[in-house]
Image (cartoon, rainbow, N blue to C red):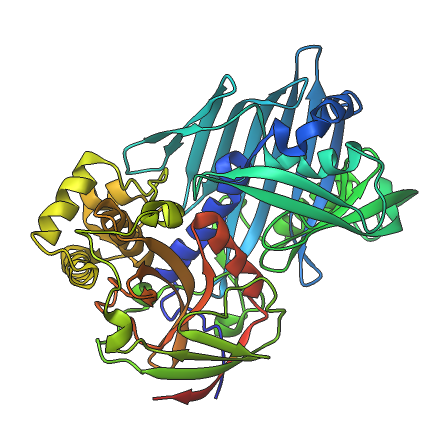
Length: 539
């Protein structure tokens, strides 16, 4: 059968987590997600400083569209002084989730040195269901300190080590164009720091095309149509920047480093236009429709609303399977590009648009190593999968003490992983949680959905020395697909387990799309509204 990503059956609960996930990812990416060092151009650091001198004050307004329909507006303002830059980004839109529109706004204020190094940032997300604020500052060239605040939860402060001054993503498009004359086919490589993995990662943007755009520079009011219409059209030359792999800015940038058009996850597009058309027309339309700017509203589309941003989790739907799911699942994926997703490897085999998942057998669960004696270089080989991270605190004393207690005297990695999996499944209440997955917070509250179960398990497993990574994708439960996250542990090879469902190993109904932390999980958003899954075989 052909199964689109279903809409959550309970509109009162599912959208809460969905909107939160979208907003958290957006705020994280803006405020603390990809921290880019000034040395990302390495020997071109001097050129970057020169490019900063060419970055002047400006204000740009954008219409926010989805499937050709305006759902909001955005703006970017750059103020300059002799000592610093101040960049203010604002975004507000009615995000379609679970058959309803949710009004959400995000505002970030970032200050940078004249060399584009971060000084401070303040990111605030306003929503009826998921308010959030993240503030922070750079401590010289060695660390970034930030504080995350959400209603009903203790503020969470973190300190991230960095090497050298850093630049936040909001100016990456400008820097990529200003650092050197843009040429089609050329690339710009950025060495980034990802706090989700505490590791450096190169981000390469390719200049894919060059084109002329006709932009509305100013508007006039049409008293007949009772709306603003274009008054002056300006022609602008721009270059298309696309990431060579994974996530990153995708859009068009002009010679001054200003965004002309950009695409966002979930089929959302930002187009530069005159303020009156971007904001005033939208505001008038909201008033005419009787929409309050701070409220949520239902849509007439019901379960089939076009462009729903994310499906709810199986926990939210009350669709938890038993331990005896299918051992084999074969699906056909259509409707969107599958490039860049982790569909091949381990238990999954991809052949064109078909993916087959086979549950691990007993032999695969037999570890080829022991916690009592590991081969030389083991920790170096799996350094990333054993590391502590800002929200996955594997080295925290409370996490370590609990992990050691659960493991007891066992030294077989399979047995220890089973014990951890069982403890997390039995100890955490299966609830929707308004939070960013944080292992220590989950340990305190003892509740959450798949994200919280997975985060705590990963921290505990790493604490006792079992390499663990996070997989994210879809779970096929009771004939429907739901967003889901689960851990993978290294035994003889990588094995999928599921503390949320209480499965060891996880059944074949787990369709993995990405491996990695919060920033990688955001890549799932580009599947929304486009991906179709046809189940070919399940047994």
